[in-house]
Structures are given as C-alpha cells and as structure tokens.
Image (tube, rainbow, N blue to C red; front, top):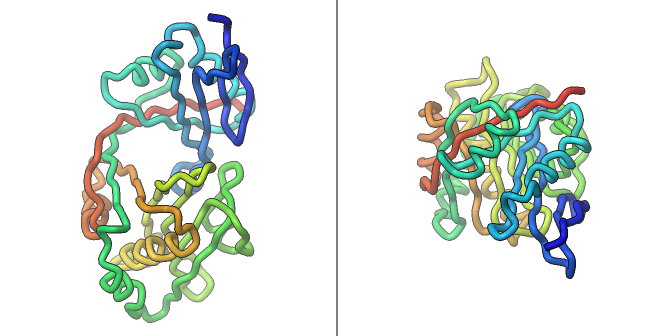
Length: 251
C-alpha cells in the first residue's frame, strides 16, 4: 500500500491513499475559553488496516502545525490504543471523565418549558449563535451579535453582567449529536438555580436552531458530583468513561 497523502477537507485533516481511500482523519473542535483556556478538542482516528504505519503521527503533526499556540485535549478510553498514542506523543493525563447522553425523545417538553419560563428576579435569559473561532471567551461571545453558526450559547444576564451559561456545538457535517459544555455559574450568582435555568434554555433552543440534532453528549469530570447530578436531573444517562489527555503547543 502506498503512503497516504495528508490534506485538509471540510475542517478536517484526512490521510488519503491511492484510489481515494481515507486511511485516517483528524479534527479539532474549539472549546469555550472559560471552560479550558487556550485549548481545542482533538479527534483522531486511523482505520485498523492502516495502523502502525505512522499515519496517526503524521495527522497529529499536521494538526499541530496549523494549531500553533493551542492546547489539544483528547478523551480516550483507558487501556486503549488511543491512550498509548497520547502517552507516546507527550500528552499528559489530567483527569477522568464520564460521558453522558441526552436524547430529545426522552425529554418531557412541557416540563422543560416550565424550567425555562421560571422567574429568576434580577436575571434575563439570553441566547447567542455563531461559530467558535480560535479559543473564544464566553463573555466576549455573549456581547457580540448573533449570526448563523454551529455554536449556541445560553446565558443568564444580570443587569449587563454574565452570571451563568451553557454552550453547545454541533458537528460540521450536520451530525445528529451535539456536544455540550457547562452549565457554569459564576461566583456571586450561585445558589439561585441558574445552572438548571440556562441548561434548560440551551436544550430547548438548540433543537429550535438545529432541528437535525437529536441528542446531546456531555463529558464531566468524575469528581464533579454537582454537575453530574445536574445532568441526571435532565435525563442524561451514562454512556462511557474516558481519560482526558492534554498537549500544549508552543506559541
């Protein structure tokens, strides 16, 4: 088999062999900066018959060459080839995560609407849509005009100050699954159920903006019991666990 060529197609790097066979693919997904400052989420996969030929290493090199200054985050299963790959290439294990999935068919819409419509004196629920370029700060996104894009931010506005937020990002190729980050409540605004409020607003608004989305996935640190409980409150169910690895590029 001839060595595949690495090229970028539709925001992804592909290792393409003779005849157009895709031997491997890599991509990065921006992560809201208040969640993980200066980082992007890495996905990388090499087809089994093409493994142990250096293709994964070449894809990672291509990603790093065009992502200078960004940290890369990779979630991989314990003991998997992906974990060995991360360690071999200098990634550092930072924490373990639980992955949870919410399907819209399991969401009681009337109950969700009640959560969204609940009054929170002094706060206003707002939405922003657009694309996450680079490593955007949530507070900056929130203050910019909305536009068509793959990201949705739902926030609690406290008289012009960002109090709480949740973010969802849909795939580049209209995949039915979105990835959620948060909810997060900023200091000084906790204890008012704002996390549940913005999360409910995000779930409701996401389906309105991106009707092709049928499920939402979220990754949560296994020791973040409060956030895990919030996920269960909405009907998220555990679907797996991964180890999170980080690799930081030089600027």
